[in-house]
Structure formats: C-alpha cells, structure tokens
Length: 351
Image 1 (cartoon, rainbow, N blue to C red):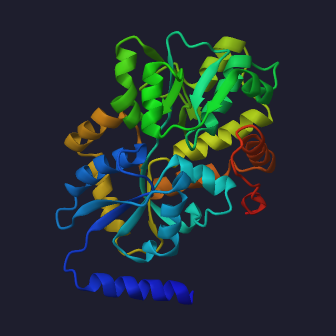
Image 2 (image 1 turned 60 degrees about the vertical axis):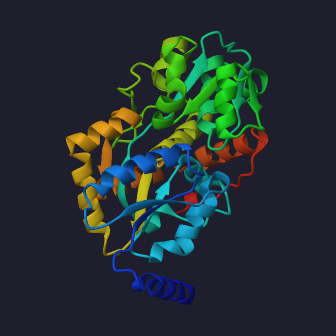
C-alpha cells in the first residue's frame, strides 16, 4: 500500500504542472502490431468526443504483452489520465504465466469491441502438412486446426504433432510475408490486421478464410461472425464431422479463445478513477456516432461495442470458463506440445 501511495504522489507531482494532461492509451505492443493498429484508430475517433482533452497512444512493448500491463498495474493506473489496452497475448498470459502481475477483475472496463480472430489459408494448402507461425497468443488457432483436421476419433494432441508444423523465428511482419510467399500456408490476424495485411490475398484468389472462433455471447456461447458468415469453428466442425465438438481439449480451446478474443481489444481503468464516467460517456458517443462507426468499421469490421458496465459483465463471463480441467489441459498442451512456458494457476480456479 505504501508503494502505491508513493507511486500516486509521484505521478501527481509529475502531472501537476500541466494544465491539460493527455489521456493516454497504453498499448503493450510495438507500433504497427495488431492492438496498436486498433488503438490508433480508437484514439482518433475518441478524440472527437473529448474536445477538451488530447488522446494519445503510448507503446510499452514486451514479451506476450506482459511488461506493459505489469507497468500499468504497478504504477501507471494511479495516474487518472492513463488507461490500459489489453490484447490477446496478455489475456492468455493472465491464465498461465506467473510473471503476469495484473488481474482484470481489479479494474473497471471503459469499453471493448467484442472481436474475433480470422484464420486464413492458401488455396492449395495441404491440411496434412500445415505450416503455421508460432508468434504469441496462437494457442486457440492450433487447437482448432487439430480438431478440424482430425475430428473426434483422433487425439487432437497427436493430430497436432503429426500434421501441424509450429514454426518459430519470424516476427509478425515477417510471418505475413512468409505466408504471401507460400513459406507458411496458414495465417491468422485480428480483424483490423486481416483487412490491412491479408484481405488482398483473399481478393486475388491466392488465399481464403478458413475459420473464425465466433463472437462471445452474454450466455457464454459463441455466435457466427457476421463479417465472415459460416466460418465459425463449431459450424465447420459439425459440417465436416457430423457431431458437435466436445471433451477436455475442446473445453480448453473454448477457455483460450474466449479470453484471447474477448479481451484482445479492451480498455481498462483503475477502479474509483474520477475520469471513468467522462470517458465512458465519450466512448458511448463514439460508438453511436455514424461517422466514427463508419471509420472504425472500414478498418476493423462490424463488431459490437460493450461499454462500461457491459464490459465488466463480459469480463465476468470470461472468468466462468476457468475450470480445473480446462485450465490444466490448456497448460499441458502449451508446455508439452507448443514448448512454451506456462504454469497451472490454482488460485484462478479457487477464486
């Protein structure tokens, strides 16, 4: 508590000399990455509805989005003019990495876009030899691939080992180029980045949309994405295999995709922050402004906004997916198959 008071006092002194401090969106990525692209769009449109303030984006990059969110949690949240943008990587890190010090339940939601992830493949892609870039936060994609390719009679972990090459060594930008050159035959992006980097390959006939994960609903189910109709994982699985997906591996996939997609573009603020109501009001105005909506949809797609209390309820739904079996299966797959660091966080199950 003493450290928090010191941090608050230091930030108060630092900003006291400024008559008009910036409202800052902290992004846990480098400029040009998926969350950064989204945040820049939102900053421009939100600015229109906060005429007395200046909305800026600050990048604090680091592995799997953890350093930026840790800095917000331990220091920056005590500045009333700072908000945090979560992404899919730090959402998965919250579930599985001990170095993640933040906890979404300790903040309040400003707003989020209830988004999806789009997975594309080359038209001639060999589904028995999938080549996929092992960049951060991609557990849900490879889990979905293993289930789609091999179906209910094959252990999805064995299917992953036999059919999917999890290829390291690319930056995100290099991975996109490798896909376009055919060195990788499957890719995935958030909607804004898919439109910016991959849609041209679909339009040219080089690639196609393979599947999406669906949009999280208030009852905990996932609905088909209207921007990519008929491509939801559960719909495709039933069409291919004649049954609905089920089992521990599927439950672990649902846990991973729900957190990763449900929090990939969300804005958080400290509880009791005096600016929350003002910014929520501005966010609501932005989401109802036809010009802002058109500008956002042109770059991201048509996705629902969950603002203020609705965003908090969304976060509570996500927490309900954390069960012992689902979390343990996700951690085991991450460690043993993907060879990534992860630990089973029993405190999340016992919360």
